[in-house]
Length: 328
Image (tube, rainbow, N blue to C red):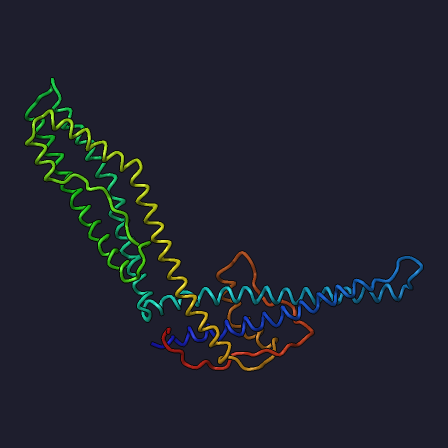
């Protein structure tokens, strides 16, 4: 699968933007060394130096400072363009790798599973809170002097209803966790697994509760309510933290895969996409292509080329890029 032409063009622009900035930074370094050497030649003060010598020195300092300023402004201009190009490249390469790289595809699918698992987890607290409330309702109806068989039966019905909903929800969460475990094996990465949730009481437990003596049921209700509230007060946060750690691992691994491939493309672009040309021509073409888009995206500041340097530097500038194949 070949890269889109727009992606190849962005790689081409990134190559010459990098080389252009490197050339300007090298020139700036030389200018700074010259300025430092010039400062050592400052003429003596007062009557020890002629007016002409002082004026000549001041003029030289002003010229040197202006040249440095021009170079810095041009470098800053290129940095803005490089950042724009890299954001665009990152987006396009991510889309490309989702279609071309099996490992990248697995990670994207895994992230979707994490989202589904979280959706189920987010819905659990409300259900468990209601479950704990209905447990209290059963306990109240079963505790003397209430001992109201009709009310107790109604409360058992409410408890069974919420137990069915919790059971369905946990089955969905567990199914996703099992899928995640399969992906973890494919990627040889235990970091992506989801934490095991407590086995919340199911309908069979409610049915059993109805059949045992009231005294035993009351003891069981107290214990199970404590389990539910313990999860709500601590276990839920631990599960969320584990989910975030798994997500972070996926994001970092995806980013590493993308950057590894990107580095290969950068080396290819710098080796094959450029021909020798003048820095001024590069800056003009870059500015024409990107300045208006940067300005439209950032209304707070105005992006425009810095003043033209009086020093011309030869640079390798992109030619028409060849086709680039799939990642290795």
